Image (cartoon, rainbow, N blue to C red; front, side, top):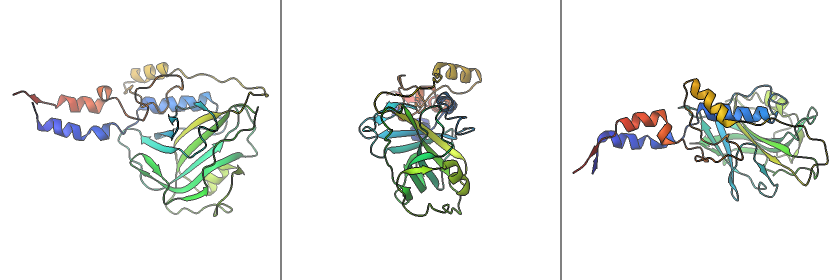
Length: 271
């Protein structure tokens, strides 16, 4: 069997096809942020350009909002950012992890800084902080016992070319409380490109917890299908309890519009 030239060209496109997030992925992660009341209680709006996944060595890639123990996420994760469509991520970014406490908590006095790195790059889809400036090196979640499930949010912001760190953030700082939105404003950070969150709880809650809504991924997929867009999900925003065939951000070849074009051009010659 000999593959014709169109097939060779199609195979060359496979890495490109597998490195895209879909509209369903974006809408799903937006839905989870709303369900956990991260939006609009803290961030007034959230329209990401990419999905962000967290991979912790011992447990792998986490689902959005997945509940884990502090021991499981004690070491810094590998962060992967997958842009929607054919977009590419260039330039420098600011990466941060903040503790938004439990749903309904008063965070007007500030949020706990667990990670703050300026000048990170995105190599392909992997966030690379090898040459970045770590203001606060990664410090794993450590919620107080009985305080309920804390929401730990990891965000990636565009960083301006002429970046200047705000006063008080030019040297290494330990974990501490700060006004993150004020920091972002003073640092003149750009768009919130991508974000994700996990939940960590220590012991059994001794406080009253606010109920939250659930996310029906099937509804999101159906509504997006009716709008005429691709329904293939990379899994970055998938339900913590739902099975995902594309956990690491790969798009299913069978359903990708680009894949359909590629497959249409394949020719098999049998001798």
